[in-house]
Length: 355
Image 1 (tube, rainbow, N blue to C red):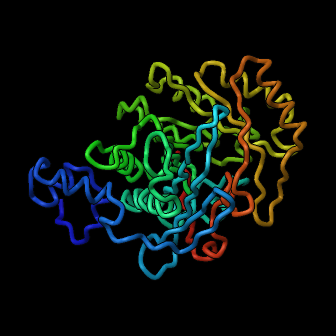
Image 2: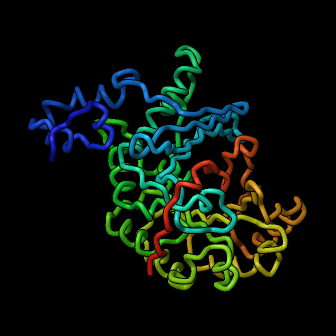
């Protein structure tokens, strides 16, 4: 392992890797590693390139990739509340700048793939979010259950397809969950995928049953899904279902099946019947997400009555289903909205989808 030239390089390393880079035993550097990863201010602050606030929701951007290209990540801190009155926050992480999956309802997909984030660039989003949260809430007023900054869940649901940048995402998860460092439980980390079967099988081999998996479905017949999500052509629904059935979930684990409802496209009751049939072999929760408008969008969101009708139809089949409450629309930070349109002109030719 090459020697460290910048203290911030630690963000991409586990304790063992950090010790190896310094040529020391992990026990000897454990206190130093813990201080760098856990103490706010131990590393130089990560400068934000943009920040937008909407009530309790915060969208922030960080520089990424080679200097001079003007690329940036987009991340969102989302306030959450339970019916019991407890509160916490979820941090939505990006794994790429742009995305090559080409989903037609997603703003990020219109950018093409501009940059695969490194593990350090992914973990840096967590560090920046921690600073934002600690600066806005004085210590005596913090009342969160797990982490002092209130960020209880990490979800790879920002820009990019996490399993298209698998090595960096896996390394980031290792660093985020490192007991001697950030110590974020795997059971509170979710990786969301459009259905990269090769990536799911690679994750399965890691034997991380507590890591949470979300799958963007959006149609349960191949003809429609291929129109919305080009990956279905090379990785069809039957193969995706098989990969999920074989995935080593924890005993009480379940998949989160994400379904974006688009008016007059995939929101009919017959589509709900197809979703229920496809989900039948799986331990899963279906998360209904009314479409969030893109810039210059061709799609529209369904009516509330349509969403409720779809939800009740799924429940009539015995499917456990929830409706996601949309947050961040005004900041272009909601599901399918993330992606700086100014970056589109810089993309190269999109790489072919995996076969």
